[in-house]
Image (cartoon, rainbow over all chains, first blue to last red; front, side, top):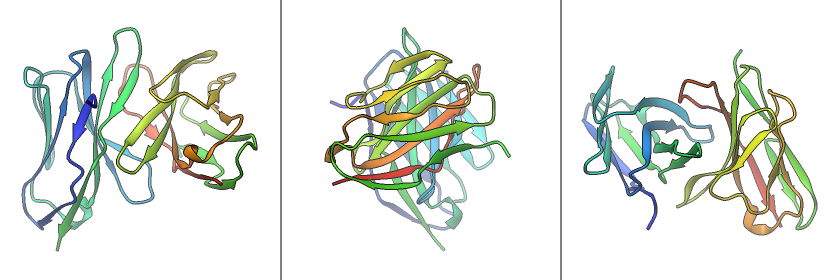
Length: 112
Length: 112
């Protein structure tokens, strides 16, 4: 079983829709949770990160972490065609090492 | 401009021919890391470095070497490349105290 599971998609939504992207994880040692966005032929860029359970909002983006269920989500409100990209969740364990574990990514296409 | 640069961007080589992919950052970041990205497997960490002369293995270190003699540079060395190392490679860096990694543009390596 992978430490981090993420639905690969692709996910197609109409412009203006609310998008929900999710990851589950199995390692209780994960302490930091991140979402990256990757456009085609580019390196990933950090969208949001958090280290506690609960919600964190930044503009149209909301990151949600539920440590008891080992589940994280990214919500995109009023989705735009420019949001079309691959979204990767990532987690870090800091107990003894500082390794990043990424999900496989979800491809999102927002249709104009 | 703050950035992470990688060279070369594209490389086709043959099995067994030693190669080095360079990575350089101009942000005075302590932490640097190498990843490979493969379809269906996502981003996997190869090696990381917390600072000069401090390196540690990520999830998939076999067949790779790294060195960190200077803060700005973190080359990835493939002593004897094999076809299963054909992949898209990313270098990343971040400052201590933040989780935001800055990724380079990627190096597409093909080993025949």
